[in-house]
Length: 149
Image (cartoon, rainbow, N blue to C red):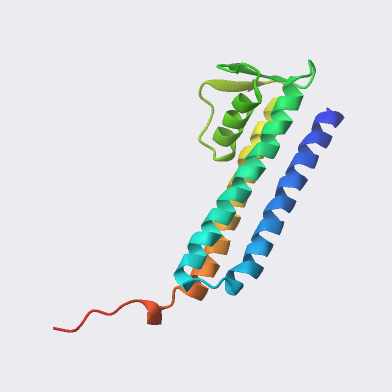
């Protein structure tokens, strides 16, 4: 159980650092972009999506490596043991869509619960970041006005 806790902690620390660094870099980069200010938000959304995708792949690597051992759990159902199935399972867990055709067994269940919680927190963090960015770049002055009748 100590090994599982250590692996889970390492994965979560890794994805939180990735997310923090990505949002920090976006925060520094967005004001410097020489593009129409509204497109800065689009760039921010794409950057945040890329960060989430990398984080899902980090969890997927954890699943893939943990299922290679006998004692750390397994994934059952429509799981063929491939890395891409681990990525698919990680995406459904991270986004809290839920388990469907692949389910965890054994100590691996702890990582799935932690991934769902971490995904929820990081997605919310991203939403807060993008909201603040929108407040900077989407002012009322910039919206086109309609001529009065």
